[in-house]
Image: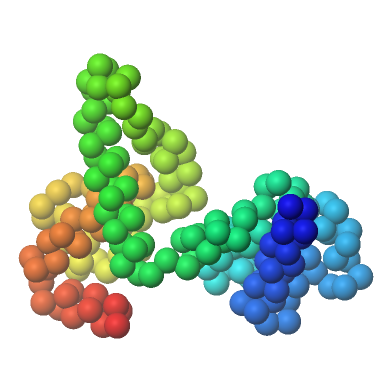
Length: 186
């Protein structure tokens, strides 16, 4: 088992090096051993490239072998998901959050089935979506989607809901936005 976790650690370092050419996650050769022992990787460049890659590699190079994912978990990490799987996950999560918010009002149902705690998801909202995520969207697009529903621009749940709604109501979008989205997909 230890050799497998060591392999995962090594693979994480190689993976980092291949994504950020010439850069080892624990720095230059003379500081690596110390940084590994202190569990102090430098992942800033990787975070700027991909949040998913950063999350995966952070797990793979954790100082504690038992905290590292196994090979199957590495292969199933969201970093490797196809765009369609990512979109389906976002839509399913949005539906689940919406459903659980409604179920939370029904105490009897809550005790019968596990539900997601939306508060746990929202705790990192500022880090995930910022304080006003609507300002990051094209203003014309944002104006068109807010005609049908008001969204709390500080809430992760509402951003997920917007993505889900636009996916399910893609045909209702103005042509200019359909073209922009279609061009980005392929």
